[in-house]
Image 1 (cartoon, rainbow, N blue to C red):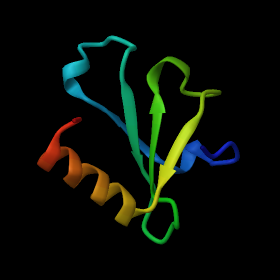
Image 2: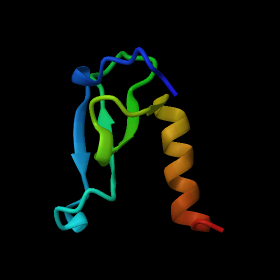
Image 3: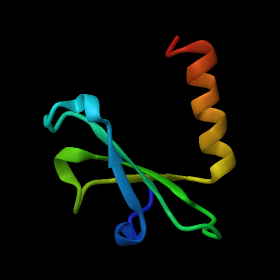
Length: 72
């Protein structure tokens, strides 16, 4: 978790399948060159809640693992 992360630097996206509910996570992408350029936060507490931040390589490994193995 990163408490001092500037959330305003990220372009946040929420799944269109969330149907307006606040039980989702948002993925934020930061401009190129940032060490931690992918972030995830809870839509229920966007301003003060925890943010998980990842390097592009770590995020890609995580997403590829989901595609390959699911959540087993």
